[in-house]
Length: 169
Image (cartoon, rainbow, N blue to C red):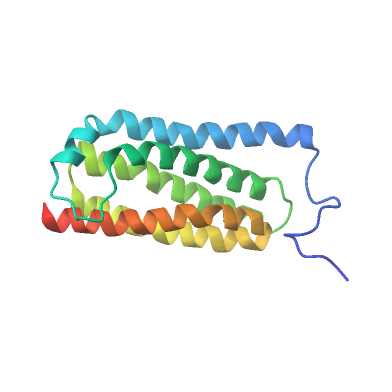
């Protein structure tokens, strides 16, 4: 009986020595998005503090640590998919790239341009892209999909916050 792509290890992954550069590339891409966001955000802390926020809004200091962890899990999820051969890998990696691009757009839209409505559109598309990425990744490696769950939950929460901030400001 053939094993599923998410559980098979025999011949399913390239040699470990060749897969580490891919992990490094994924980490660089994810943390580059973080760097672009940080550079584009200007005085994000001051801007966030000045907004009329709902009572359930997190403190500004929480975003940095949360995103640091999430970008790491996004990179590892992409790496787990990239190192598996098969037809499902390409669509999952395309979706992974799309979600990362949408992620990169949000901070400049929200903080630099102060376009809260456009940022909400972007984060709504990002939420859909993360769901798509997780579903496609699950077909290739279930661990990758599981690593995307905290990201999905955080983006859903951030989308609700974005909507609230847009409506209140």
